[in-house]
Length: 137
Length: 108
Image 1 (cartoon, each protein chain N blue to C red):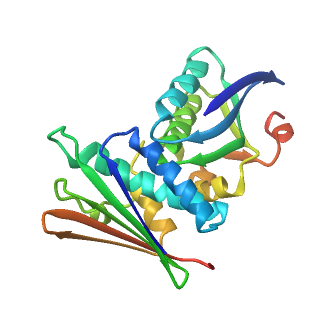
Image 2 (image 1 turned 180 degrees about the vertical axis):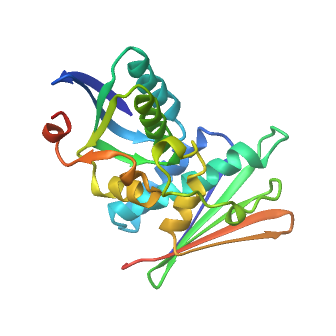
């Protein structure tokens, strides 16, 4: 099973994306906790693209492909923005007490914890991020 | 997202309903910071109706904790759904916050 979703680089589009994931979850009969996690990893990765990938301020599209093969979910996210490798970001120190925890920097960390594998490549002037997770499906 | 407030046992109890995400965390932050700036030092965030949170929302929880710690106040969370609790666990937030199973315990 495979589904392709294309959205624009606007914050409002995150709600459109979440709606599409809910629909897909129903079609594919995904359990609620998994759906929430997929929504979360997509919001974290796609919001980074929306906020930082296009300093020109123009409208661009972001392509997202979701598929399930033998119980493994694969999400591929492609954009034509400036090169950005989320896997190279510094991981936050989650053992710090509240007073010392920096505000922010958690998004990509959550993605790497929820998914089994996160990989990035720059190809044909595009950022391509692939997220994989094994499920019981 | 929808927030309702009531006062129990000296705590301002805020019930969170729905999603807290990149599209609405600003509203959530304004409300919570507004409550603290309004003079409430002891706050319970009842998370029973919260069915989604992303890092933008977690950020607001951390801001509230920092503000209340600085004021020697209390921030208690309660009745979190298991999927949400998992996100708090992964983030290391479960050790930062006081999380109670029931609202009754959170306002003690």
